[in-house]
Amino acid sequence: METATKVKADVKNLALAEAGKRRIEWANQHMPVLQLIRKRFIKEQPLKGIRMSACLHVTSETANLAITLRDGGADLVLCASNPLSTQDDTAASMVKDYGIPTYAIKGEDNATYYAHINAALDHRPQITMDDGADLVTQLLTKRSNQIPDVIGGTEETTTGVIRLRAMAKDGTLKFPVIAVNDALTKHFFDNRYGTGQSTLDGVIRATNLLVAGLKVVVAGYGWCGRGVAMRAKGLGADVIVTEINPTKAIEAVMDGFRVMPMNEAAKIGDVFITVTGNKSVLSHEHFEKMKDGAVVSNSGHFNVEIDIPALEKLSSSKKEARPFVEEFTMKDGRHLYLLGDGRLVNLAAAEGHPASVMDMSFANQALSAEYMVKHASELKPNVYPVPEPLDQQIAKLKLESLGVTIDKLTPEQEHYLASWQEGT
Image 1 (tube, rainbow, N blue to C red):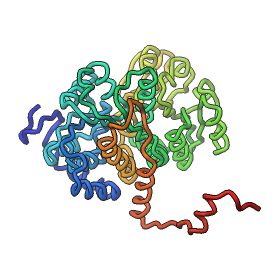
Image 2 (cartoon, one colour):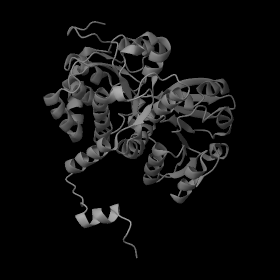
Image 3 (cartoon, rainbow, N blue to C red):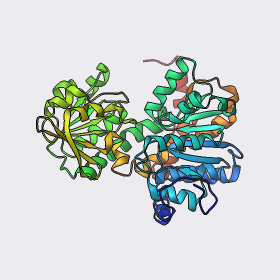
Image 4 (cartoon, helix red, strand yellow):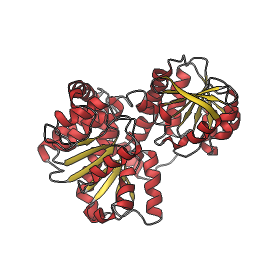
């Protein structure tokens, strides 16, 4: 639609903008690193005239990133990277108060989701900013005539980086992309502490279950799985981890968790949380073994981690038990509960990561976009890490914002570390 502000957009209701602006301003208070980057961007205009299309979760934290990019000179269009992760009031404020074209409605169907991605691609971006690689995939497969316009891109999440590396391997990727997810100041904190807290927040908001005493099964022990397991344990859960990687499995054992195959865990789990980035992690054989009342949820990027069609085939009926809680009655009388349509439960049923952790993630996005504009001509079509100096700069700024200082090497120590002659 064309809004009263003459900004092209498709959001639920512009009347929600006032509440959205309050939400955006609250998040901004807890994003000091991004605030510092924004101040510099306003002064230096490193993105001046660059057309950007961003496919991200449309939340108050993302809004502050978008405002930073806009204030750095970018000509930005934003669309949702997940049908259930949009905060409708935030989306409305983005359009009405900040003049940023936004295409996102919470609960949008699949056709609308891709219509919004295509609206963002109609902007003919020079820089893409993705969370899950749907924007880039659509560009490379359905809008390949636009590839010459693209300087490069950035990618926010594990699932997207996996897809992009697969593209690079088979020669499909046609421009350089920075894997923001792989920055230490991203996955060490966002994936672990952000996903850990917000996932449990989503499960609790949706179900109002007491976590203490429940058997919580965490599928996958990457950085997100570590965070979910740690937070569930902190709330008193008996945590069980399932894994395919022996190194990660032994780490989970040494962190104090039980590790077993999903076929065994399915028999005893009360709450299941998938965070693997793979498909059919919970499938027909597992649903058949789950006990009455088991709760199934996902915090990986796509809802394919749970084989929802298989769950539907096993059931005789389904109904909404609570908002974002779907009750499936099995043909044998058991009841299984699916949260948030199997989509990211932390965003479907809660508010996603706290602003203070997204501060570092989105600082990486902003600085990586600036780096790509300056250096894309030197890069081949491939997936690149965030340059270490940028990563270190973000960590330093975050420490300063927390009032934390650290030691510095003395000249003698620097010499010792750089030499080999001095021994025992």
